[in-house]
Image 1 (cartoon, rainbow, N blue to C red):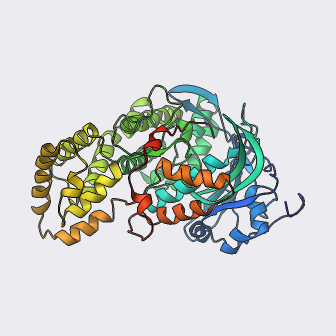
Image 2 (image 1 turned 135 degrees about the horizontal axis):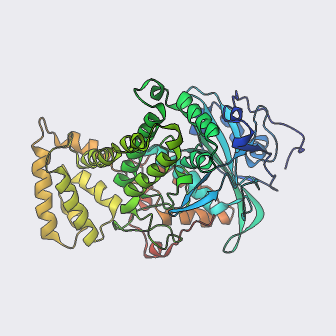
Length: 493
């Protein structure tokens, strides 16, 4: 550390700290626990710009200490919040920020943004944990947060990740790291479950009013019960988010209710994965022995979690039917949102009868032939105006694919004003060339463990421009190596 524990760093940010105004029942104030000899691992100038932070802080020793949790930040009010939740479908009771410390909220041109340190030390909610995060998982979260944003998927962001030689015990001894996360709010479904389950209905109402007033003001003006309107609005955002996950082949891996954002953001990047060979039943989380959070189950699990949120909000509603009515639109919204996304990937401007079967038949064929998900869509984009052989070569059942391809071409070219070159560019703008495959992250992590962070930076640059054909990145857009299928990602981080 470069400064004393009594010194402060003024980052030049305007802090508001609205969550802290909720009161002592919602959190515990505490300071992060310092780490020795911190070092920069990765930084995001784009997120620095988002929050109005001078990017020079991301190269300074004072900024390094501040974002490792080694010195207090002027204007911040560090705290860890309490929440509960369902984990793997079972009520887990009180949870809370076991290794996350919310520094506070800053005013930005994009609206207020909360800044949170993940891995900053023990909190009252750490339970049996040590309050730390390891370098491996911190790099994955940093890269994936920014990758998802570049893909246009609602997500928390990551300002930076710092590392320390401090040992952390997981399956083996690893080293510590801290990710600085940014989002308009880190409030989760589990926050509502906590106060509802404990019969603290006044505090439940306080929390719901806080969320409505600051993030869903239209719910206050909606006819009927404002809390039912809140549930419906959260359901709609969640439906859109999950549809985007499915369309890009993203598996979250641990969709517990305490990992679900009340704003419909992708949060808590743990055992996530982007699909390699398409397998609708793929389980990316080695800890998920029952396959609860398999790729094809994510839409239904999201509804299950929304139902749990609805149960938590029941004390604020007139009757159970209000909650059920608020949840009902999800059943149509999610598949409709997904079909719109799939149609965009196909180059189809509008959804028509028959598009669902076009999609389903392709998914079945891709699953049978274990076709690489990302490479398929990229090659299909080029096939609009080029020869179909590169995409055809991905399949073993060539004749079956040829029949499907002919159906797609007929549907595509029947669109009014169809232009092959324009459609190709539109498809390339939604079908990424590069995603954060597990093996790409693993290569960056292994080099980082040796003190070489250049691959983190190289991969970050590619992921920030996922739709572009950038020279020197062919290896990042290639098929995964054979050893990639042996990578095991678990809840341990």
